Image (tube, rainbow, N blue to C red; front, side, top):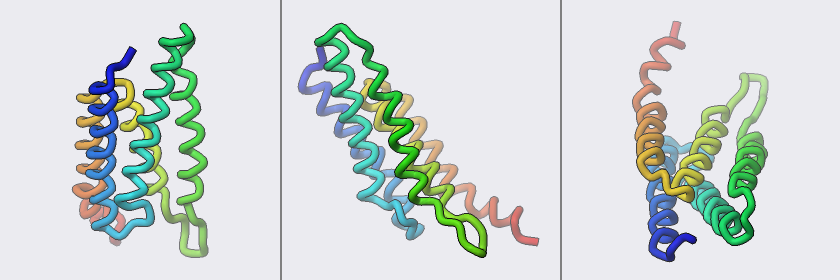
Length: 139
């Protein structure tokens, strides 16, 4: 069974890591910014903590809720994608939402190093690769 301090560490980690990615999105004025990324990361963490507690209490699988988080978050990500005459927009936002949920699951499962490394790589990809991407797309 998880102790209260383990749960607090998981929840705090989810808020901090979700905020780190959310700040990058906020600075770049994207639709899913600080609050959205915190809530997604925190929500995925809470569902994972619940799943772990229920799995331990009822001797069941603790992976079922996590599996449904992936599908459920896809629904939110799909809402971020917009198609118009100029092309498709919001795919990076949808992918970020999906990744932030996985970071929340990692925190809830106690995989803090994995969550920190994933967050670091995400911030590098989101902020550091933008100029490089523009360089390749400019003709």
